[in-house]
Length: 195
Image: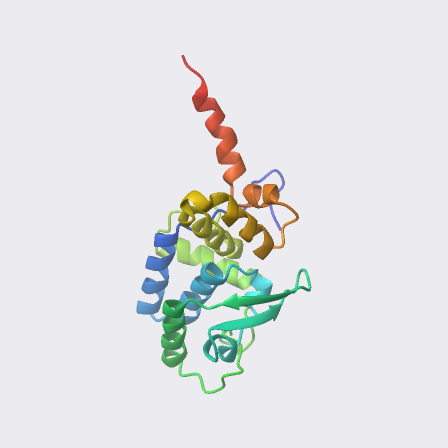
């Protein structure tokens, strides 16, 4: 729950910061959080759907199918081949014996709650001095969207249309607001003024 009159909108994690962070977490033996942050950024799905992932879903093929918890819609997610190598490394490092086990288990052998994951992300932010203001599970989904948009170059409008569909937003305008692009555009208006 947020504090009254506080700003709680998640900020997106810069892509290169994310890549460095998942490598550091892996190096330091925090394999599940390394995988969680990577999965959130590479798949662009909500935390409620990330929590349902099993090793079998991530290692059996180059894509997986989920029914989104929030929307009930069926979604196919393609797994980046380089990221799938990282998934396999985490799987081996954790010495997993059951492919159908959930990927994000706590020490008590239960799927981590969203609240617990957010606490862990705040600890990681502090421990690794991650430059992001509001860091939460949602920051990862936004990182996916920003990376897709920024990598699109001249096809930015088409990227927004695709992201709008992937995110199940009602319009491209909503996607622009979600990614913080609309606010950036509005703030650039002030730069048009001369003094």
